[in-house]
Amino acid sequence: MKTNILTVALIASALTFGCQQGTNDQKNNATSDTVDTTSTGFDGLIDKKNVKLYSLQNGGVSLTLTNYGARLVSLNVPDKSGASKDVILGYETAQEYKDNANNFYGAIVGRYGNRIGDATFTLDGEKYDLEKNDGKNSLHGGTNGVFNKVWDAASSNDTSVTLTYVSPDKEAGYPGTVNMSVTYSIDGQGGLNIQYNATTDKKTVLNLTNHAYFNLNGAGASTILDHQLQVDADAITAVDQTLIPTGESLKVAGTPFDFREPRTIGERINQDHAQLKIGGGYDHNFELNKTDDYQKVATVYAPETGIEMQIFTTEPGLQFYSGNFMKQEDPKGKKGLSYPFRAAFCLETQHYPDAPNHPTFASTVLEPSQEYSSKTTYRFSVR
Image (cartoon, rainbow, N blue to C red; front, side, top):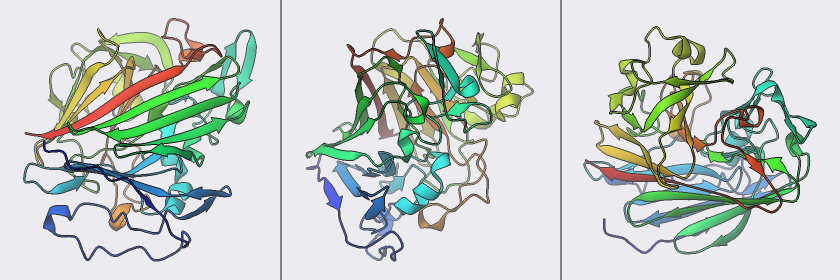
């Protein structure tokens, strides 16, 4: 892929969230699926902090992101005909993200990505009660998670933007003041890299991930059931009726969860399997077969557009969610498009859900003497 000079643009304006969005007159057919990044819908205040929109571009890949929730707003990649496709779901204004924060579109979620059972855990004999926002459980850090915070722009250069957030002691119930950062960068091989780092002043638990909703046919396409998925995992983490791990590893061989070879997502999603019934489809942690610290763990391919996405990570788990709770009547997204049932999938790199309550799972404990570090790459190509 030929690499162009990357431009990082801070989109600034004195207008507020309610202003009229910029027009798309200038777009030609090759960019008809891209988002208008000159929109004024990301200039204003949330929690008395400035919200902005940033833009990155390298070769054929470009993205926009906002410091509200450190979230991805658009991700444009070329399809097999050379046209640009925006492959993640989202909204056109920060206010819409704020109003619909509980769907987590494109956000960094935490302090603990995924679920913690009964919204509680014990650390060194002390019990910590978290915010319940998923029935009796805590999901993605609770209602006061980092996805709902305005992060600070610490630095930017021709290839990346680094955002930081200081989560105070006991925020959302978690111990310790945690200084965290996330760096988004686009490399010359079609890769979106996400680097997470954090430190704490008190023993705590931490599990950060990005919650992008993907559709490789383009955001607003009606389904992802035609996508082909391959995941290098011999087992999933079995869950109870509230999607909390039971502690059992379920071998995927002979089940609808066997994606060790590429299979269409929709091929077995409606089979009569207890775990599929619990999730209403796929909403499970795949226990990755890791031999190196950072390696390729999954591939998704959309035959309609020819877009392929490979996932590389340092994490031991991958949460595959097939959009089972999406509804046609949900608030419309970018360009006024609807995002109906199973119109997107999530592949969230992570430590296992509810790990603080399962000693046999890889630990998510972070000590004051340690630095939290995690890296994930979503790499795009066509075939």
